[in-house]
Length: 291
Length: 223
Image (cartoon, rainbow over all chains, first blue to last red; front, side, top):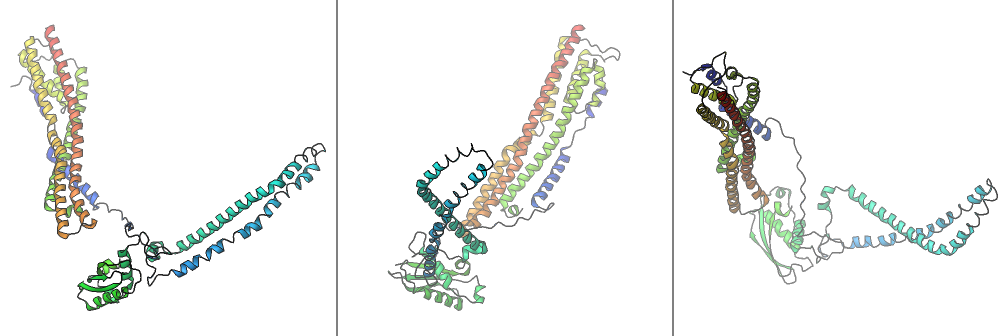
């Protein structure tokens, strides 16, 4: 028996939180966090999918990869651009017109108001010193007129050129903004205006892909059959002309295979020998080829 | 959620283990927070009470107000040992106790034993936090490695190495590492915090023991 039992009773009364209860609390907290994260308790904010832009840096598209391409239009852009420079170069005309007025307007108003306004109200003593300095700049300005005129001429020319360039840029921007920018890359003619198909960035595979894509005609029914695919091997001679082709794998749909054959036969007449001595395997699939 | 549901069976098992670790470690964090918070609060109040009173019997009667303080346990053990050594009950009117210095050594041993017991009580379950903090990232890493192995095997079977094929498997596998870190980081932080608090309380217990012994020795010398 303890000599002072009331002390032990006091100490044993100390409560302590149970670990089991804490595990239950922790489990509930985890469930709540899981609900928050998974969006069950609070629905997530709907974020619109961001647009994805794919840039092919290897096969850079060009505006006119082949001069002999059936759908290429090398002539109109060249002719359209050539007349433009003459239209833009008549800039000297307004320059020549505008040059005289600028020097005339500036000296004329200066002498007229100064003698009239200052000579009349003020005493005679002041006009005497003023005329003396004024004639000197006038006399000096006459020999300098040519230099100043040249400078003003050149500056006016620059200004007009800048104005013209700004106007051209504005026109181009207006034309670009009027189009749908999202489809601009897909609809715009690719390549350079005077391209011949041999420039950097021209890929024979890209050209072939583009040509076959445009030459391939499918019916409405076939456009829905994205599961069909046919693999064709194209054989070119040394001049780059198509010698023959063969189906390495047929689609199983005769109409589909016929449309592939028609597209390949159009390829026979292309002029540039960029594919000389090559064998090319092409897979005709709506998913892949018509991307 | 889709990432978890789309993972393989091994990765799911790893995730279950990690969730178990997380639930237990958070339970321990809550438990230790309550225990140590109450112990610190009651110890502070008990020290104020202890230094305000001059007589041990009065202090002994007021211990019920500080049930969570480890210092009350020390006082009780030391006082009981002192009473045993003296061999008589404390009188209500006279709180002075007389004994020799050998009795003080007995009291010191009783205080050391009580300090050790209270330290162990305060440190209970902290090893689980340490284990969770140190092993959960590795368990998660195991799940990730296994998931990536599965993903690469799938890539080999499909024969395609495009991002659409590679990315889902790897992201599912990486969930295991993420959950492992989610379980480990609070455990490590809680462990460090509570070890610091326990060290502070242990220091308080040591100081209280020394003060208690000083008082006992002064009482002995006074006779």
